[in-house]
View 1 (tube, chains in turn cyan, brown):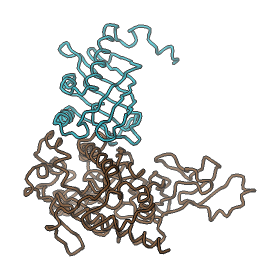
View 2 (cartoon, each protein chain N blue to C red):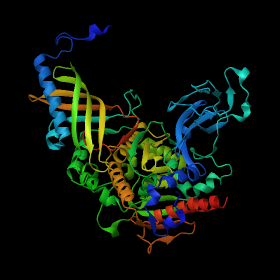
View 3 (cartoon, each protein chain N blue to C red):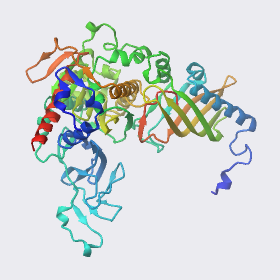
Amino acid sequence: MTMAEVIPLDGAQTGVSDAEARVLQSFIFLEAQLADESRWEEWEALLDDDMHYWVPISETEDPSGLDPSIINDNRSRLATRLRQLRTGTRHSQAPKSVMRRMLSNIVMERTGAETYKVAANFVVYEYQNQSTMQLNVWPGRVEYSLRRRDGALRMFAKKVHLVLASGHVPTMSFII
Amino acid sequence: MMPNIAELIRPTTVHADLYTSRAIFDREMDVIFREGWVYIGHESEVPKRGDFVRRTMGVEPVILTRDTDGVHVLANRCSHRGNLLCQLERGNRRAFNCQYHGWVFSQKGDLLDIPFPVGADVDRSKLGLRRAHVETYRGFIFATFNNAPCSLVEHLGNGRQALDRASNLSPAGEIMLRSTWVQHLFSANWKMLGENEADGYHVNFVHDSFAKGVSRDGKYGNVLQKDERKLTAVSRYLGNGHTEIDYESTYDRPLIWLGTAADRYPEYNAAMSARYGAEQATEIMRAGPPHTYIFPNLFLAETALVMIQPLGVGETVNWHTPMYLKGAPDELNRRILRQGEVALGPSSFLTADDAIIAERQWRALRGSPGWLDLNRGLSRERQEANGVAVSHYTDETPNRGFWRHYKSMMADRTVADAAA
């Protein structure tokens, strides 16, 4: 297959119409902003009940499922994570990191009647103001699984491949 | 300028310079991490001939290999021009070929071949890779570059029981590592990580947010509470720098420490009874895993194994991987994996906060040197017959012992060097 063959000229090949693409893009931009600004309650409102929040240590598939992950939260563990952040004594986010992230190279795909996969490259710029007082740069690729439910988009999976995942990773207890 | 280490360590206070001095760090790399015993890996990481993993002894890169004779630990440095010989983190190889000039070494470090041999005016037998002295206990591999070390058993001392305790949770009597790790970077001194493992005092403060975020029923119920007198876990100094916190008294039934119950895993329960007898199996499964620090770089973190890797005086990597139980069902091992992810790693519920506190502490010590206090529990600790000191969960008994051992290694050595 040549490159030209995989580049869609319209929504026909990805199954995502222009109107849907605008909605999907708005969704991931909103998600990014809420994460940047540590607006955890609003961020949590974007999630569906079967949410899976995953930061693996490698982009290579692990068929055994026995490799440890940096984050591997089901909905209940993610709820605990957000409760912990909200206590005010989560020292690794007290004070909260100052963050801004860029999303780019966005690709979208319909995966079912009401479901979509959206992927993008990202960079999070984090001012780590808890201890090292440094600017941390977190590049990677993010994959969202989204579905339309009751007329609104919900996120049911977010998988984040950090470029640094298999290296020496500094503390990262914000929502990546 | 080398500080006088003996003067920096008193029975119940230690000086900040011990954490921030580059000269002391360099000395530690020699005295503790080259001349002393260091944890390298586990036999399950290199099961087949030719298997290898990369590791470090302090800052020195090494390769753990297996050949027909067993396991070897080799300096990961070509004996010709010092190039890093092996770049892959793990794999299987018949030999190690240097990419610089093509020298070839065996899995035991012997120099097998030199390209363009006509001009090679060297004695090959003298140019093998530097090989460490290696001993194992229950599959745990330790090494030292000391030519005349004490035996591993002597070094481990009472710490052996922790390696037994971890291994005995397996119906095959062995833990199983996969050599896939999360590596959490702490911008702090390595000793802070070691000391923190046996510091029960910090738990209610550093991990306050965890206490509030999770349900207190179950595993963490006993230790996440405000009444000092209700904490029944104990802290111990085991000798030779090894320390532990023992949660055994807080577990009232088998597998509660894994947030589950033995009758949920009948296959495991039966296999444990078959190996140990029903009564002993029940007790092993109730008492649970160790929370034990083996000096200087191994931490048996209950369901995970942690390696502490110093990178520099203010930089340390905390490696962790699940401590799987050989012969246990996958569902049980998966629970072990998920529990380790709660506690350990850059985004975990516990060590993320430990890291930030260590980083703040290290920066404060660097800017404001002075003495650190380690008096807590001095009047209530008890000495036991085997040289173990035991005290309340929150007491600083373990770390007073840690520093006595450190002083015996580092300060005596300074005197010896000065005399030489």
